[in-house]
Length: 341
Image (cartoon, rainbow, N blue to C red; front, side, top):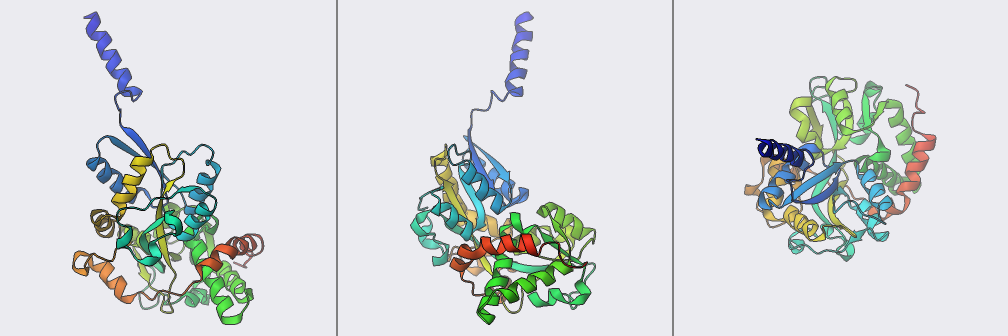
């Protein structure tokens, strides 16, 4: 009896302290949100039962900052998701391990990062989104400048741009458009001032953004298409692809330099860009995929429609890379919160 009680005690202790789980931990940093991350965690673990995928969900800028701060002692194995610009910064700082995945030749040329430091798995267009219970589709803004109309004053919610790759890209697009049209940044900053005057709040994270939109604390936002599609039913969101065009981010993945589980990190990257991984993302996570060898009749209807209607906006990504931080510093110091509400 005494031996039986000791055995039970040891079993409970093993469970409590995780001693019974001998799986290899693969750590993934990502801005893609719980639903998509759990989806790929479960599928990859089903294919590889010896692996325990553990993810940390944070904004793209936060991932870059954290990978940089941890460079002497890397804690992540994979960086999954975020604009190509951020991956290029990380590559320049020698934070990424070069790796050419098995599917590298099957994706769009713009999805192949220089030096094999990262590859694009998705294309992420920016959109104008609105609460479909509060705003009739015929009245919704059709283009970027429409968001500045007086009727939307105090009705706009914006994800905090300092932590968001999506918002930094949208702001960068506005600044680039200003330079293209006028040769100067003044018009771009003025546009952002007008947007600031329209904005009720800069929201800390996407979950809060969706909650506030659902409660109609604001009814208009600028955001990325897959996240809008993912929550559209429960938050009552609809979207518009801006008529003049929209920036389309190449959403990347990379192995972190010095990753403790480099072999499994490479396997995870291989899965994300495989035909199975790409179809899983398109069908279950509303992702516009970068592979060019998957026929339209295998894709969900929403993606076929987006591919037909999307007008990609020309953007000088190199310019956004070299001047984007300067623009954001000026916005944060001189524009943010200055508009008359």
